[in-house]
Length: 163
Image (cartoon, helix red, strand yellow):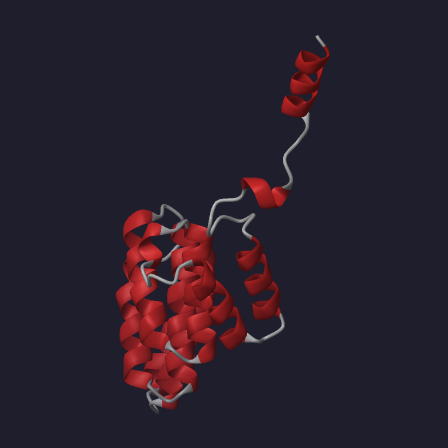
């Protein structure tokens, strides 16, 4: 009887967070450390921490929070092509159009700030059709800045006034 009571008590005790997380899930300690490092602008260290979760280099098999975090840190560290590859994978699997739109705006902003104006303009025009309404103003602002950098002032003025 005493053994049965102990067994029932043990079954009702909550497991610690370290016992119940899945690799790459929001409860994964490596992901939480990577989030902290990312907020502290230590993007390379965040990438290293995330790579500890998946040394096989196959992010598509891990949960979305991991893939978003990895892509964002790759982009912040300057590895646009790696970030874009992950964003393309996420495009096929996620329903969150707002996050995808923000990701594409970050890619275009990255290209703009590095002087890749034609690439930034192409990224912005590519995303125009699937742009969530919440991001229209940010999209117009970035497009206008790109066009002004290319000395296309008339086009920039028209892009700001178009809704």
